[in-house]
Image 1 (spheres, one colour):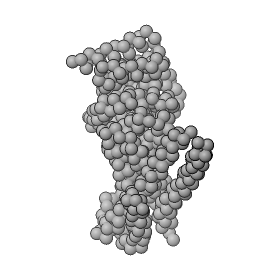
Image 2: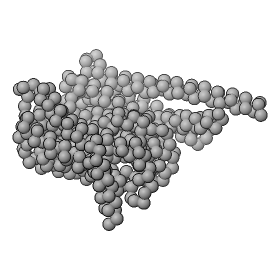
Image 3: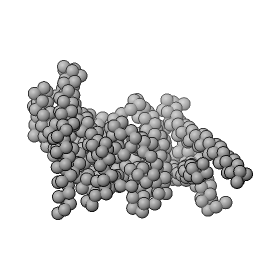
Image 4: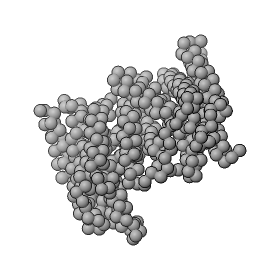
Length: 227
Length: 212
Length: 51
């Protein structure tokens, strides 16, 4: 078994162990929240997933920067895979956030939840990334376009966050506030384990997806060479 | 200052081309007026003044989109872009010249749209004018880069709005905010910040969009 | 179970379902890649026989 395979197996094992541990701790062991009761436990899945999605987009932008810097074609696939994972985690953030809104405020969607609104904007933005990729012939041109767009995305995240905060003041007053994390030590520990689990899941999926995409590209090259 | 001479020459080429063919600008003018008329009919009669401000911003956004869709049409049809890229000038000069052209068209369209808006809906205050000037800079900067991207793809006209709209949501927030709240300074500042960040980013990355 | 407990469980299940869906889609992808490899191997063998 090669070194790369070893790493993939290791990552998958770490992700599985951490996920099971995080899930069990979050649902069974973490202390009950005084204000929100059991429903606070959705926090341990929603927030780590959201943070992981940011990490995916940042990783994708970093690889995009490397591509523009070094012009090495392998970074294109790496950046694309990271953004791909980011969109999957982004969808999960939207769904779990929507469920949280339903629990807390009785509605499936609320514009006053900044994180959720931001993820909707990012979701639209990165869906356009896929549209862009699919409508350009593969090659250095597509790699450059995707990389520039991925870089725009990572700049758009803070700018959009600021915009959403500014928009709250005139679109509607803030009625709902979710109190800042008044976490006890054990809650914070569970949160960290869940975050580590999600990051490990990302790393594991990323490694596998990247291997699959590389294989796909190589097979296409081989077919062209043989035919 | 050959850089600015290049930019001036390229921008003059675009404006002259438009002056001769009159392809884009009349369409933008007609579109923005038609949009305002449609908005009158789509607003219920008891709608507030702030609702029409929001619609004005939508009209501006889509007028900009109309202009951007044509921004690289001449280059694409005549295959000029490949030649321009090979020309011995900095590639970002192409972006700057295009953005100036787009800005000019958008500005002219708004010179007609704002009086029409004042006539049809609400009087126009200085905050709105300042916000529109700042927003135009950002729309032209980001839009020109994205138009170059879309021109390189197969989907072209279809792709541009998809790339453009999520990126300019902050512009809409800043613009609408500056025109409806009492203290617009914060929103105007935000628009200026957006312009600065995305102009630098577009300027720096345009080279990679047009070159292999 | 109270309603909020149901929703929290639902959220965890959704995450699990999406991960499983990903695995299923990945399995499809793998089988497609396998098929392609088989085709290419056959092609290469035929080439060698003809040569």
